[in-house]
Length: 446
Image (tube, rainbow, N blue to C red; front, side, top):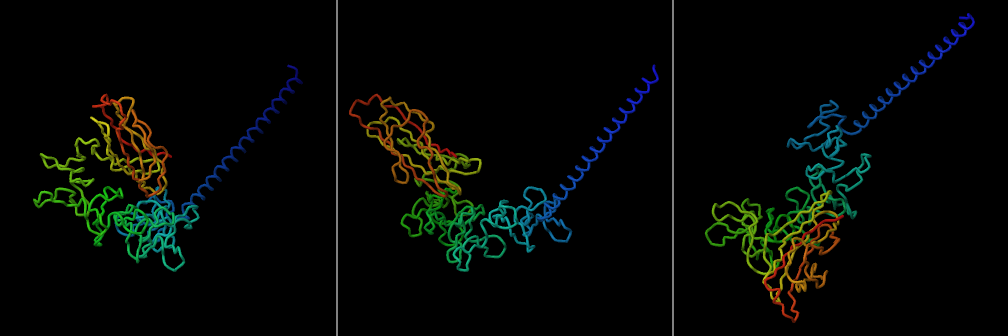
């Protein structure tokens, strides 16, 4: 090979080798730079995490109860101050090592922020909505009229939790334990579930209507409800003299010295066995069996009246946000062997026990109609004695009754349907022996 050519090739080789070294150096610098950025980011993340977990009690610990996270000899996370083996101060609800509920900011052992109600694990009072560690919603010890006295969420025993005039939903109106002359007198919550159980004021007139405790022993004496439907069923006071007149509890119907109807077996003031829900002296729920004395639930009347007292139904319809609509005291309509002039009625109540307005539909369900197509059975529908649906023929199949009805919080509607087999003036013998059946179902909508 020509020496000059060989020299040129060697020079080109050296140049390529130098370029490769420069590229390798650049890659090394890039890798080092990226590594440094990762280290810095990690350090920043650790610093932020440290700050986040130290600005509230907890410091990132995973201790379950009575945790001393800063080693000062005092509990500062999941503290049990009432010795019931459950955390009630600086509660870490989600297990991330940060206090979420009942935050004690000043270390006095009492909750200051995100205070729950009776240990149910949700913030109700002094709620910090923007995470700036300052209460800005449903404050404790509110003086609403600037008279120097507490009107709402009042802590009367200075333990940090409200006792009187408790506003559960933060709408500025007391929901439970409403004070009158500085005592619990209305809407008393006896089982700590945030709902009234005793001396319930259903119409807002500040007078108890349901589960009235007349002797102050903490048990209802007149106008007792059933399964918290806020409607009087037992020991009903008809003439407003504070004495029970109708459907009494603990009835001894055969004078044998033992209770036979509406029996309160656990002495809590409410019937538990042989329950007569509608006051007709016939057991509807938790009735005794006839052969072995065991309880037989949901026994009902089977009389052959045009409208039969079938199993009373309490229908709970829950949405994802736990709104509950109660449809109570339902009786199915059953008409058969009818003749012109027959009438029947169907009454039921719809109660919204939630804290928000609910919309619902009422639908026909389980319809059976063998009457000829002339269909002379009609009905009208009223709500609280106001007509909402004029004379209408009964359906032949499941169908809509009412659509998108709104019901306010803590409100009850009383519906009444009146049925009639209409006289037409022509031979109607073709419909003798035919029947119509159906029931009403409530459906919550959004």
